[in-house]
Amino acid sequence: MVEWIGCCYKLNTGLKTLFSIVTVSELVYWRDPKKSGIVFGGIFVILISLTFLSFISVVAYTSLAILSGTFAFRVYKNVLQTVQKTQEGHPFK
Image (cartoon, rainbow, N blue to C red; front, side):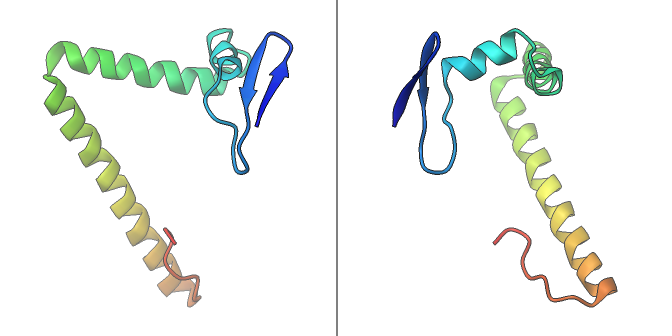
């Protein structure tokens, strides 16, 4: 569903609002400094990485960092489940 919001269109789906001009303008104008800082900080780190490393290396290291983070989260949840003796189940289901 597409709806008109003041100056531009916003695309709504059943679950989430997709990428639109409204969200980009909110990031650019720093309406929510925390979100804008995270986005622009991430872009800055990627650009600095690309000046020193190749694109393939940046993609590989980023993928490795994401994989390591998810593995650490899974181990943390399993240890927490064992210590508290709960049956929460798989954290990514």
